[in-house]
Amino acid sequence: MSRPFAVSRVRLLLPLLLGMGLACATSGTGSGPAPDPDPGPSAGSQTDPPADPQTDPGPSGGDRARSAVEGMLIGAIIGGQAGPIGAAVGATTLLVYSAITGEVPFQGASGGGGSGAGSEAARERALEEELERHASLEEAIQEELKRQEDLLRDLDREEAARAAGPKGGDATASEEELAERADPRAAPRAPKPRDLPPAIFEEERVSVAKGTWGNAKRVRAVKKSLDADRDGKPEEVRWFDEESGYLIRQEQDRDYDGRGDAWSRYEWGELVERQLDEDGNGEPDVWERYAGGRMIGREIDRDGDGKRDAFYRYEGDSLVEERHDPNGDGNVERVLFYEQRRLVRAEEDRDGDGRTDTWTHYRETGGKDAVARIEKDSKGDGQADVFETFEQKDGKTVLAKREEDMNGDGKVDVTSLYEDGKLVRRQISDPALLPL
View 1: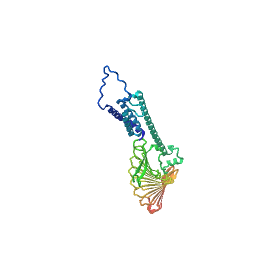
View 2 (view 1 turned 120 degrees about the horizontal axis):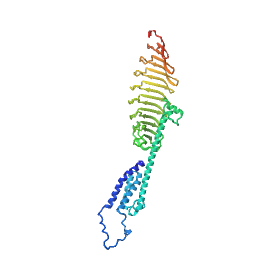
View 3 (view 1 turned 120 degrees about the vertical axis):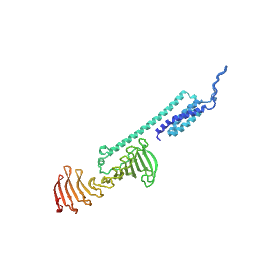
View 4 (view 1 turned 45 degrees about the horizontal axis):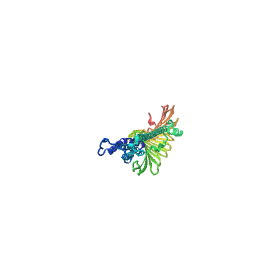
């Protein structure tokens, strides 16, 4: 338990303990028969001599009560260093001691009637100084916690700036890294855990049962939790293998809504898998795989139906393939192929029969991917029978030529030529097709 909470609980216990002390002290002096009232000096009698110090009965009941209360307060303050239980034990111990002896420990003076107003004031000042010291300590701890929260917010802003690419103003990244982040066809680098002060984590040793995370055997781990806003719901939890010390798992609440939305698995301290909840429904909708510090695969459930409908594959540092299921029927209808981060070919199943019927080829023009040729299977027999060639005109892609195999013999029968996208001439090699 942190020291500010211990101090707060001691303050809550003081009124209760004060009442207990007063009850104990009062009961100790009020029991038994009441003394007879003083009849006063009889007529003609001499005034009694002063009491002999050797036969002085000691502190009165009222003095013992005051000493008991003061001893209880000092015991609560001293014991409070060990938590609320320590406060209760300390208060009870010194309460009993002071009630019996009439002395307040650590004061150097009797708690009885012979202490005088000066010692009473000194005790009160000492007590006030002790309470002020604890209040100052509590304030210092709260300031430190606030500083740690500010540090976390700064780290979050820096992380967001790095993810934003060149406009994020990440002065630590090289130009090559910034350009890479801005390129959607570059294989993303494996995200690294934030470098946070160890002191802000709560640490405990745990045993993780087999299958809890899909683990093949029981894992003994050191669990480190970060609850920056102290709401009882950690924003980040890290597990380290107890034997090797390597990070093996991390869970995060990135939007601070109290629910986890990122789950990462590590092998020998290196990220290998990560699941993300991007729509905030508590279920993963993004699945990522990493190797050698780079992403090698990414799968996405874009429509939130629980089925993965977009698949990305990376080799080295570049995207090489995309597969998409746009209608959500569980079948891939469109596949894109890349070479050196340029789109070179697309294959599509446009009629949804499970077979590819359109092949589109691309070439780079002016730094962009431009359609160069489209092949189509218009008859549904698995063979292309229409071939269209395109060219760039004033920055636009226009049809230049269409070739067709009308009779399905595998040979082009009709060739149509275009200028600026308009038909200007048609050639027919099979007279049986005339007139078209």
